[in-house]
Length: 375
Image 1 (cartoon, rainbow, N blue to C red):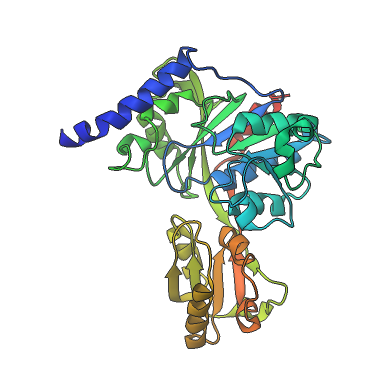
Image 2: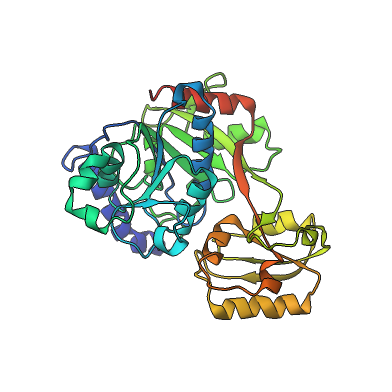
């Protein structure tokens, strides 16, 4: 009871904000090109970056989008730059944020940009000439990019001023929203009722062996009725049709972070794991199947590495002279912002890329059909 009283001001503020948008008192507008919003209602990692990459990867594999200009727009969390900026493969994580830089490095042929104002960012991406004519172009480091034919909005579910053409909500399998509470007593940054606004709900980070019975429990707990196993969609409590999909994380083979890496360390028996992400438990579980984890060094989420951190890693590697040093792909973007890293350390540093994949071929097909309908 006391908890409900404490959360009431935050809940009512959020509820009133959505009321204003839902009833047209505050305006929402669509971009001039199709947009796909990928987001969540919780803090912490639900897999937004891997699912943004999954969406890009799917679009690039579809004939309908061949020759189309795909763009990704992100806020660029904790970046040092201001306003609208294009992310290039030569950008630093400090300039663009680690996640947008990771996406650009994975898909160098697409346009990646950052802008806290998503409506403005979509306008500039779909009409680059408007950026060049704007006063904001003076602060933009690179203004040369093609007009976007489709824009993927990374982490924009709360950005109500922009109405997406396809809205995808991510829910972590390990943290069901229907068992969670609003901040600061829980992990929810938005009200649970907002789950009804999504076109697609993806339950992320599922075990790869999740069976149909457990999926049915999830669908029921989300309040979805009349679920059709052919379209993988049902009707929520507000009478809206929603597609429910399930995905898992696939860990790829470790790859070098720096050019001077010694590939022989891939065959080491022991590993020093270090990371600066919200939850590195799944990575640790994966690595434990390949190596004995000799040391585990954990930094804060989106941690900016310092000289002191490098000395900590040097000390750990000195205690374990034959161990491989392993981190996440996201952390590697920030590591590259460091000045000179001793060669004895960089030669042992590897990253483990991850990919989000659906748990069945049917889910992949249904997802493709949703994207196909955008053009």
